[in-house]
Image (cartoon, rainbow over all chains, first blue to last red; front, side, top):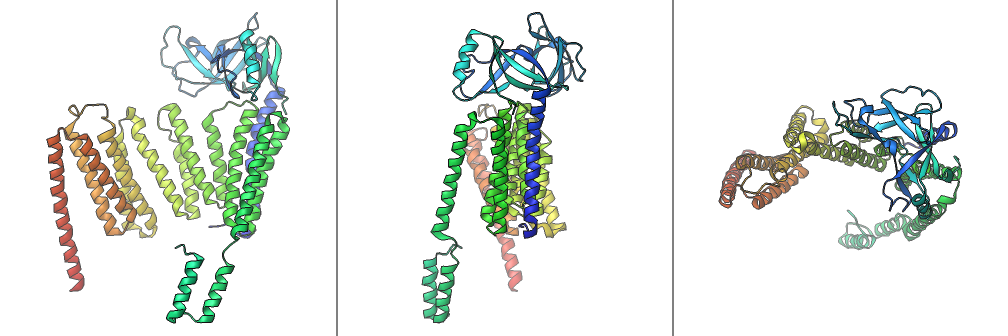
Length: 190
Length: 368
């Protein structure tokens, strides 16, 4: 069955509008988070020091990606949404202090709550010293081709931190990379 | 049937000589032929030039992508999306449906690329299957609104990819696939596009067969066989009750039988692949092998009876696959295999004799 003549342009308009709206929502969601969110700097653990900035896609690991089993509620499935409360220590390092399935606003400037998804299920009882892997959505960083090697050199010498924007609902977005407190890589939001 | 102009000209000359076509008739036919041969070389070259230009634009954009501010990149993506669908609209209006569908596919491709590129631009690290689902829904929208079957076919492919990603991450069956599948299958039905129904049936069969590998730690093939047989039986009954949906029933029968066969095959040859031939469960193998052969023979018989070529050929292929695999696997021992084949041969020969007698009786009834 083909489209009758009179319906062609309304149909095209519908498809264009709906698909553009979907893409536009993706953009707006990010832009609003990046411009109005709270900025925090998280220590980055290189996932593979050799290949870290080769090519244009980088996997970032964080200390906070592994939560101590004691903090995580038991009997949760893969993919469960968790809200992790981070506390800033004297050395400017954020450490997880609590995790819950519901969001509660953080108290004070030294605390922030970020949302993540559990990447492995929790059993009823956890082993001593076990950790659970959480994915916050800030693990991928896209570096322009050719700039990776320069950044890699800096990683070897100083510790890289990720500049992250945290929204009022715990959602996070990557703003850029810091090395030694200086912004070494970031783009204007739009 | 694809007939070349030269061949047709020769045929028309021959028909004129035989007196079936008059001389003025021949001239008119040849004139008509020369007219309706489409855009020809000029048109084909124009299309190729357009394709080359398209690739030139894409390469240029890719080369300068990193230097562009985000606003410009978004402008290019949205502009490309609108241009693709706008072009599709123009082409459909001009009656150039084939090119119109190509433009719709280009629009769907740009939608998918935009999802990926926006994610990259803003370092979005969501759940990758979600991006594929979003793309699939976009393809479904374009296919349904613009009545574009190629876009719907692509939507089904994306749904299967989405399922595969989600089920691989969980190492379990991801049941929401059925919702996506149903949406695209409904669109195919609404469009009355027969190849689409085949694509839908194939996707569902693949989904069913993989259940056997995902549930119960990969030993749930009995479920697959049961599901396949149930589908075949339902199609069998359905053909009697509601003969209107003939295409649906014959497809259901073929795909159901095929799914059941795949399950039986897995039970026989893929599950015990690590066991030595001596340790395998011979009685179980014999039962499932007999079932497989019976299924294949049934498909062949019914294929002949109902004129369902697909079913007939599936039966032949299934039968051949089964005996070849049995030959290589051996039924307990080589002598056991030989005995098995002998018994099977005797049974099939008896069936052949029976079929011959029925056929002879039918033709004598017709002629008498």
